[in-house]
Length: 130
Ligand SMILES: [Zn+2]
Image (cartoon, rainbow, N blue to C red; front, side, top):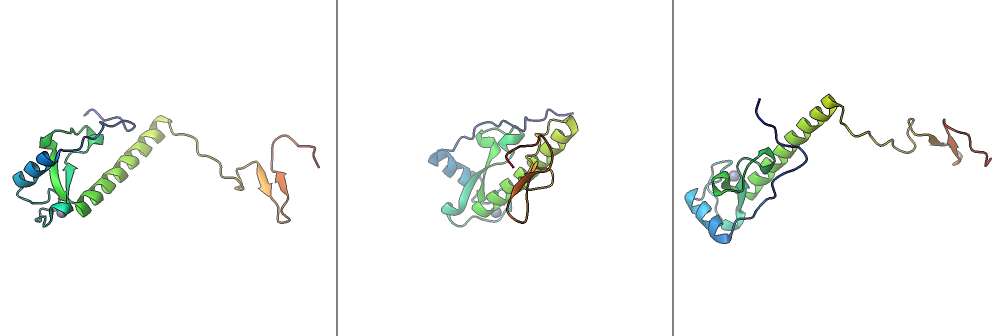
C-alpha cells in the first residue's frame, strides 16, 4: 500500500516567480494542463499543482502547469471534496471522529423551549429555580 499523506498537514504552497510562470506558460505552449485548450489571456492563466500538495505533490516546476482559472478552481474543489470524503471514512473507521456538537433545541439537547417560551430541562439534574 502506498504511503498516504496526512489529512491534516500539507506542504506550504510556494508561488512561482513571474519569470517561472512565463517559462511555464511558454513550455506548455499556452495550453491549459487540465482541459488542453489554449489559454487566450495571460490573466486567465493560473499555475496549478498537477499532483496536489495534499497528495504529497511538490512545489517543483515539474509538478506545475498552467491552467484556466475556471479549470484550476474546479480541479481544486473536486480534490478537496475527495480528500474530505477519504478523511471522513478514515475517521469513522478508526473511531477518531470528533463528537458532533449537539444542536441546542434539538431532541438530544438537555434543554428544550416550550411553546410558551419557557426553557425547561429534558433530562439531567433538576434545577430548583422554579
Ligand atoms: Zn482549461
